[in-house]
Length: 356
Image (tube, rainbow, N blue to C red; front, top):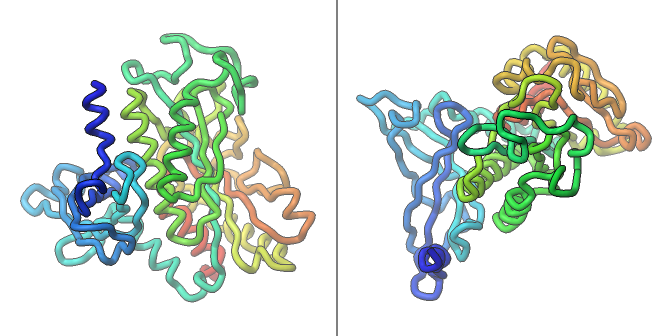
């Protein structure tokens, strides 16, 4: 096994200029991540310099068997924390051979929103709080939980320390460092309210990069849990009952919100989000109704309300934002399995472009 580890950790730059590029894309379910690798003649830092590639869409639920070729367009490059050196991870989106985005390509539509001049001028910032649950591989039960049983009630686990309160920290810390190595703007981690549940935060990221960074951070987490023999779940309510669900709170601001008088802009934006509440909820993740119950720090899925420092609201405004009269707000509705391309672009479209 040690010899295998030596081979895995070979430093290619000592013997060749060639690099390995791992092309990553989102599969047919909208949550499954796929990837495959290819050799390139040398280091690349610009995604436009990378070759397009193809894959068998009939094997990912994205194309029929009789016309299965799907084309990958490289969109963003990150350093590869697994192979290291000059090797890279490449976030891609998917198109037909004729150049049309396939139905599961949510990045294409998001990029249109973020390239709109009015959106560009507002420089939208996002900070996404990605919650997830670590599960024991064979039984799909949270790590640290007795098989077939339950731990003590919630309370000591949030940001907890100790073998009886914190489960999976080695995986979480490995992911944190791997994301920093990759160049993802990961801004922190913490243990969540339900034992075995964790959160990482990405941002502030501007526009389309928020979606790219969340997807690649998810990919890195999937790879690390693969190595550890643990399953990562993005289910918004992995354990029924009196346990917290898992969300992906989206912190958001525009240039106007960050400047003097921004609080009035924030209130107008929140009013617009309220008018389109049902549309946003429909796009904010599968199974979210099991999480947004009005309990466990959520607002009921059918109710839109906002408040200052209120974690039971749909939209929370921070005390600092209220005090300073400018800043950002937090959309607490997105589920942990949301598509960040959809959520970030939808918030920008509603608050900047949409005219009620």
